[in-house]
Amino acid sequence: LPPRTTTTTIITTAFLTLPPRTTLQVRTPKTKTSSTTILNLSTPLSPAKNNITTTIMSASAQQLRTDLLKIIGENPGGHQDATVRASFASKLQAYSNADGVDPSDVIFAIGKSVFGVELDSSPAPAKSKADDLPIVDFDYMKQFMKEVFLSYGVSPDRAETCSEVLIEADKRGIDSHGLGRLKPIYCDRMDNGILWPDRPIDVVTESETTALVDGNLGLGLYIGPHCMQMAIDKAKKYGVGFVACRNSTHYGIAGYYATMATEQGCIGLTGTNARPSIAPTFGVEPMLGTNPLVFGIPTSDEYPFVIDCATSVNQRGKIEKYAREGVETPRGAVIDDKGIERTDTEGILRDMVLGKCALTPMGGAGDKMGGYKGYGWATTVELLCIALQSGPWGEDICGLDRATGKPKPMPLGHFFLAIDIEKICPVDTFKKNTGEFLAALRASKKAPTGPGRIWTAGEPENDARTERTGQGGMKVNVPLQKNMQALRDNRPGLKEKYGKLPFE
Image (cartoon, rainbow, N blue to C red; front, side, top):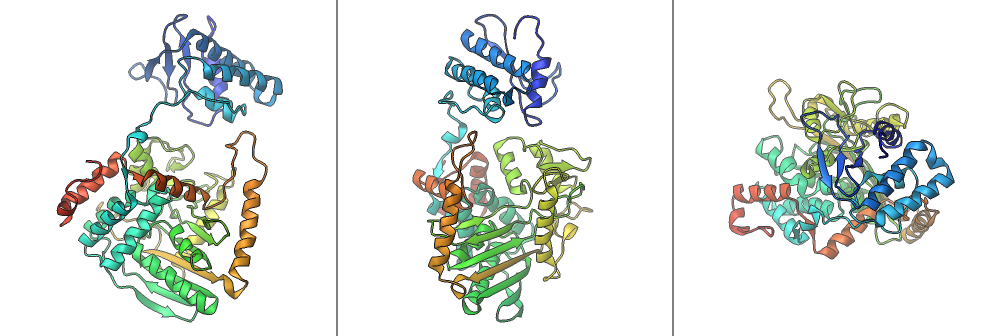
């Protein structure tokens, strides 16, 4: 900064153009050639803990950064002025090419998100910890998970199905619902006696096109495929099949079931409720599950159109993933009972169990960004999971006895719908029509400040599958390595079969 210039103006101006809680790194030269000071301003500074570190930057880079900060400070609305944007872009490019520049410097985020600057090149990022993670073959990982289920007494055919649902999540890049769920969601719950490994599936009522099924608190990973196939079989015979399910448990990625339908020439729809996590719009109490509403539609592409997402901004599994990675939860995804938007991941997970934190619906808290829409969709799914089934909701499926703190069963509801396309039009015609429209979406005009590509649902998962298959499997982070080791060391028969895991 120029002599006698305080950081207050520039910091304030930068925060006006950045999302709340963005970490702003401000480097102030101590001398013309000395190192610079980085202040992490995501939390208030204190004499005891001010998060100060140092890095080396060339004098020319220091001057360019000073110039960039000056442009921001003197032009609060500069991103709307073409001349200011051009000046900022020129200096940012020069700064990017200078020696000693930190590629994670927030100035690049400002350039892209506020000034719309796309650099020809940016400083090469340092090798991340993710680059050093071991890669484990999908077949190996699926077999390991199958062996774990077998060790709990799950029948071989059901263990095969359970491991298939989980590995499919990892293949699609949905890390929150694959191996990451094996121990904490399925194994720990079987250990706690609130989930049973091999219960019968009973048909309560049935017609030609509908059915109500009772899973008897067995593994949702085999109950879900059973119900979806039942709906598909009915659709193939009568055009439409609908199956409601009660007393099930967590059934993995909902997109798996929609894809079952598309692979058999059907349109698929599924949803599930879950332990209360979402607060209603203008509320702070968790009342609704993350409740995905999932569609699968066949296309002429090599992958189907499958929209698989929660009706909340984020789901609990993603926050658990943030915890494993040691990162903060994005602001706006969680609200506590005092109405404060939280980012402290570990605290969020603790307070969600205690009912003191809630996820926000799609659109966020309040109604300014349409939060009532996500709230409405989450409620729709909840109704379809409890009304037909006369199923429990709220505290009755929270998984915890508030009085004793002990775990308790979570009897969930699901629904599955399949529509046989051939009963309406030739499936090839249908795929051609969907494929042409989706291709038009992807070919439409791109945002000049965006990544230069438009995706359609199912495409990111296909990209992940292609990348991970090409690299030879999935990366396994340290927390998941420890989970695998714990299961190997404590489940009967696994120590002999897996004496040395791939990353040991």
